[in-house]
Length: 545
Image (cartoon, rainbow, N blue to C red):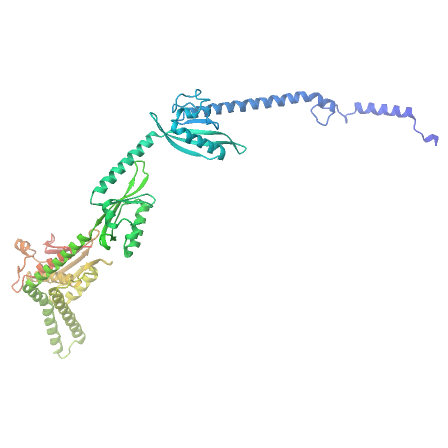
């Protein structure tokens, strides 16, 4: 047991040896002051230098930030001082705490600091201003008012609270010189008052509508027409026109365009609906701001009644002319019937001769009988049309297609032309050429021109064609041309060809071209004839849309 005890002296010696090995060993280097895991004594020695460096860097940063803040403050001060506004901060008693440099109210800052804003206000304004300050400080409200200062003009003031933790500690007072604006508004007010005074004194009916379509002003004449309690304009519009009025006016209002429409309005003068012409133009300020509409109302009832009387008088006059010109109509009917009746006789004779042969061509005979039927129907239509012309009734125009009408004329005249040794050549567009008119009358005009063209070439013993051309040289206009290759028109014929009873043919009545011209002119068009540069004559019918 004793042999196992540790020897204290040996321990000391061993520890000394171990310590000697630790100090000199490569595995245990000398402590590094920058190493936070190094000995505590080294870190404590380096701490002041590290703190000094950090403080130096922080101080430089703070100095830079402070310099930037000073520069921003100076810039903001220059901006505020150069403003056209007077900007103050005041306490609850109206005492000026800060002020910018402004010449709106003398004296300029800093002489105003500590003075009360009441020093610049008339005594009559002290009470309202004190009440405004109390409202701002107690309730935190924002207030605006306009004040007139004798000798200085009009000023608008904005009073707003400055809050700290929800409590009003001061107020901002921003004052702006609004004298020019008030003078402009006063000028506009006087101008509108003068306009309304003039408008009330005129018999014309005038109205003004605001840009929100909420308020309408009418002058005395219009008020007398529609009554004092007119409400909205739509209330006096006839139910049949109301939807159209709303739709048209809404479209014009949205586009800021003029408005023009005729509507039935209820008149308070006799409690009846009268036709009225409503015209309106948009109003704008110089800067382009939309101000609403200025409009007029014209009672069209007397004009419409006069127009109705004029139409009735014209109809009576036209009827009397028709009665007085029955002899001309009789001659005209004889002239118009001559062609289909002659065609019937010629075609029927040819059919009879074909049947009289030993081997009649029944297919050809059938075609001849169909031609007789077509010409008979046309002759009957001419008689009916003449009967209607003699009556007192007006014949209403219908929509017709000139291309189809021309093709129908070719069908009616082609066989006759072929028997006389001519053919008809056409140039007709594929698309429709619609017009309003009397199809039978225009068809008869074209047939007369084709027959005249054939007769002109027969008299000159010329073999050739009749050219019919339909064209639209301009928008809304159609032209029908009939050209022959005959001898052309002499000077005498050009001067008198449209005169009644003028004819160059022994069996002619002299009514054809005169009637054709009157029919075309009744359709709003014109009929002209001239010599063609390439030979022959050309007649041109021009019809509007």
